[in-house]
Image 1 (spheres, rainbow, N blue to C red):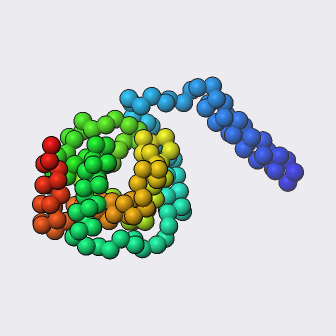
Image 2 (cartoon, rainbow, N blue to C red):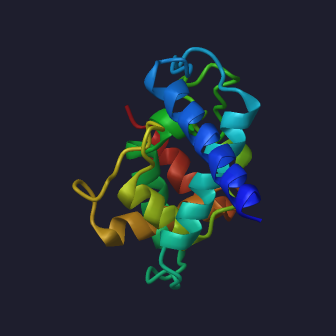
Length: 171
């Protein structure tokens, strides 16, 4: 039994030491102009989603779901988020900003995140992804308003969509 435990601990130490050496010796690919490997996507995306799920408040959105708030959220999105995440009706067509992990083009793919999770990501950002923390520039109320819009951006009432498109058309 003693040999089994020592063997298991030694095996774990070799794996940890190998992973540490792989990273510290600069063998890990870090270029942003090539896609990451499947294992890296699996680990990082899974870790990011698990962290957001754990950290995000499990609270309802304090911003009321009204046409006015959707329009306000749409205007905030167009002014602050669309440059990276895309403008409704104007897809990047694969020629958007290149970052890995890739930036989700929200008008095309939508999001599975809850409003509370969208708020949390917008407020705190995602390390090493290009998604910066907005808490220094935007109030919680504005971030909740954007979350209200982002969650519904692909299923807006026609009059709300028209008001947001009018704002987008301004020079």
